[in-house]
Figure (cartoon, chains in turn green, cyan):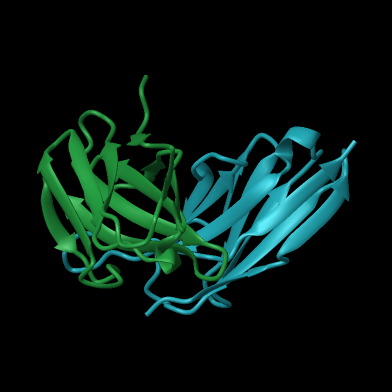
Length: 114
Length: 115
């Protein structure tokens, strides 16, 4: 039974480059969440989709961050241009319905911006 | 908005001892309280959750208690084992008018169980 799948697992790139993180939610789950985890700020919600539509993006830190969900089985989080302070672990999570818990997390993408 | 505080930040116990992690929340409208376990290089995994209409819930060696009046909830692990070593996060959420439940996480507790 496949869980939430994220790629790549690790990404190292130089500042100024575009970074694209990918997520495949659990089949049948209609809600998708992107989180960022850092030592300083812990786990923070960046954006939430329901039925492929962004519902709450108030956690997206800057215009350099954007997220899309073109279909029910795929989402991307893009950073352009990237900066060293964007270094973090980015998690994707999914749940069956908006108010449905729990959220199931992927194993994350560890992003390092040099 | 919601604020969740978690203590202690680190906890070391001997195998077989009990471990207790405590969290407080600020939003009295919060009604769902999950606990997640995060192992190195992995994403958070739900281990137990409780809703506001229940005061206590138990699953084998793990239990969670909720005190709505005091706005705090706790995770109890009995008969700890080395494989319980991980970082544990509490979270709180409430239903928003979009039907969405936004999880606000505590800062985490690093539990180390020594053989």
